[in-house]
Length: 147
Image (cartoon, rainbow, N blue to C red):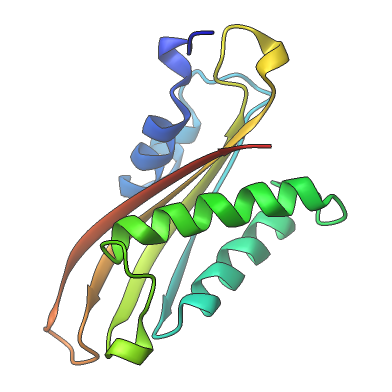
């Protein structure tokens, strides 16, 4: 069970969220069966961050909202990515923090053996800090989960 070097799903998600122009990444040679999307969210509430990413995933056909396992996999990837941004404390407004984030979602089969199935990666990049302009710093998070 090894990952194809060109199909490192987390690396692709991070490159996508950090790129100024998402076509820089999406036009590279990745399998045509892979899907990717990007978006933005800002909030003092972590549930709104989760909702924005889930909504983008459904609207862009990244997950089938009728299948619990797909929504569940996405949820865990989002929470794992939020742990990176919030340094392990997935709290925002209750501790007077706010985020302004770009996010990317990537879905594909990163393993050489296709029987390993599809995986989802969620990358978050942006700022976190006190809800006062100028009192924030950069943060990044990555979550990967199997479907």
